[in-house]
Image (cartoon, rainbow, N blue to C red; front, side):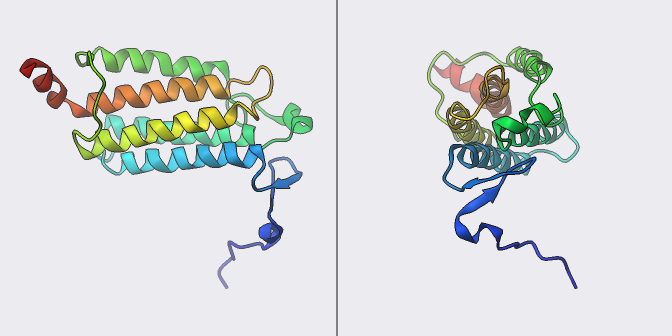
Amino acid sequence: MAPRIYTKTGDDGTTGLYFGGRVRKDDAAPRAYGTVDEAQAAIGLARAEAAPGGELDALLVQLCRDLYVCMAELATLPENRHKLSPGTTAVSDEMVASLEPRIDDLIARFEMPSDFVVPGANRASAALDVARTVVRRAERESLAVAAPGSHVVRYLNRLSDLLWALARWQEGEHVLSKRSEQ
């Protein structure tokens, strides 16, 4: 018999947290880590547009793995946060710092737009822009949950910047040709 994925423990409107405890599903913590989960799925959608095994694919897989760390931290009650491990179940300063050189590398590959960008130049860039906006929402939702000293909000802020740069990079020649037409 195949294992069941339903437990029925959430039928009362509560959900279990990492390292124990239960809260209502509309509590700030499930809203925050749920939105990070949405961001991860949106990044997965963008990944579906990437060449398998390519640079974009590999980076998006790593970002999805990092978001598991964000979700673990956000799904932990304050009294259990001492059980978190930096880089595994808690966002570390190194995780945040690792995004900055990636952003710098990407923006060196294209001419920065001087105007607001209209999303949708192609499917990959559009999916990355959707992922960026979901990450921004996750950042806002995480403000209510992130403990003092947490790096979750900073990580999500840098991640949205990285996704913006990835979207512009994926627009490729389209961005450059549009700028030359102006």
